[in-house]
Image (cartoon, rainbow, N blue to C red; front, side, top):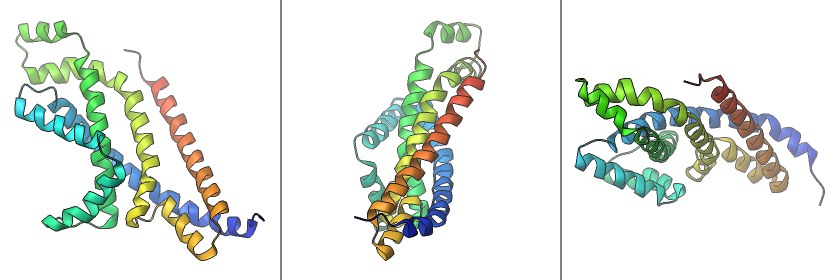
Length: 217
């Protein structure tokens, strides 16, 4: 087997364009996933039992089913009930919903681990539960959340490769298009692996820098 360097040279700029699209999809999905996860996580700590049950069902369903199936449900099943989205937005929505469930568990575990006595003390001086959450619990919980949340968002970026299954143009899909025309799977998949490795390495480095830059309080 001869390694085709010409295909590699041809593919490098095309895959670079694909990685830009991967970042666009991942950033939008990350923002939506963070918002959804925060709301769901706080909902799981609510005194409203139906709300807690709804969040529990959502989290258990997402964590108990493969992401690829969730993507197919969003793209192929939702149109049956009249909800139609483009490939791009279906992919972003599926990633955001998936990420939101894991972030919800991070929020629930972190906020819920704070000493109960602090909540009781704040309530005893007349603070409402909403104020206790905003001014007492969240300020203490956000720093411990950062490592787990950033790790989940890095995982989301890797999982964006599954969107190629519904023809979303991102890094993996761009590589598949090159393979279809040049039939060089070894070269292209190796190059894809290197691209993903470089991207995740940069994101991991940025995550560590953010964690170190956070104040210890």
